[in-house]
Length: 550
Image 1 (cartoon, helix red, strand yellow):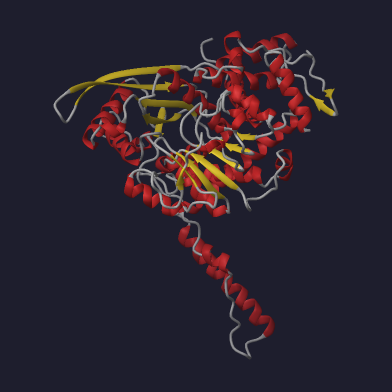
Image 2 (spheres, rainbow, N blue to C red):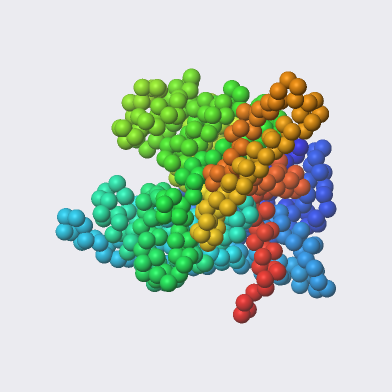
């Protein structure tokens, strides 16, 4: 199966991702049946991305979208109901797919800041809403000097496909403020955050039913609390659901247990669903399961740290970490708790006693089973994709792999678990938090005591049944709960419910990606399979809802 899929990908790349045959009937390549794709042609401005070293980020997302379009178009035409001629159906399919692609709204904001020194400075921020096929839009706010229009457009598009991939009913959005948060005091950051919130509110770019931000690079619970408070005390002062305008808040401000670690936990479950699948592990010539597996992290922020924790608990060893100021390496593995304590005390991993500072070309090029890029986009490129010695890449960051690198990795039989699936844990738990805010009650509160008492009644019932059968001559027959049942006897806490919902979402989405990859003979190309799933769901939303004022 793998050899045939690789042949297909090479054929596609040689023809600008356009399949040779114009029919949809399967044909043979080697010993494998290959499905021919539609005649949709990737726009000429995007064809160079197959070879570019440093492509435009939004172009990358559009390129992957068109790859999914090619696979899916004929199926959508075949399944469209109605008595229209085939050509009319195809026009409608192409029209709706064309609606999905562009970013629908982009807002650029500039406002003044008076620094603590008395100096004045202009702050620039952006908010992009890629799609409103579902509302509200959803996406984080990042504070970074790399923020620009292209970045927020690309990240908002990824959010659209990410939400659809894991069945979270949001449109995609993203925001950024062009600052280095380390260069500003807490007082200055609060002023920037609150003013940015007001500017978004004035333009209708924030609200519980309109657009709901979340934390991202350079922001966290503190900033989300400022946003919620600002919105609730200004434009949302009459809205009982005002605190649902943002997620990722502290618990006492309407946050939810498990949100901070959600993305890292989702990455663990994403890898887990594939690493235990024997068919995929045989394709990359490794054994199923976590036993003896090693991994390298690129980036040790919130996402990287929690990913390290969960993978370590599963039995894998972290042998290398790459940060912005240094890289460390220990072939025997590192303890995540010791590393976290060291970083909190020293604000760096440089000098960590549990590992040596790496002196080679790049720690990402060391041999390992799993590579986790968990920092910024475009770190795996055409120039370095051939140097990686991993078997699995888990894209914890958004857009870490360029199209040219993606092709090289597939040809090398490296399993890439794509960003739009594997880092969706954050938005999934954000969805749970948003629902909690709208319901105004925490998960489990209404049923916690009832479930606990029901479990005790169950034990008593078992005891009474045994005593009726065997009598009480020797005294009461003790019924002792097992260790697993004892842990759950009090019922599910909010964290238990959140973890269960996240685990289920990641497992269900992984199975859907596997089925699509098998259906279209995509082999290891999970990214295209994930895009196909997302595009189909968004397409059906537009098709069934219809279009307004066209």
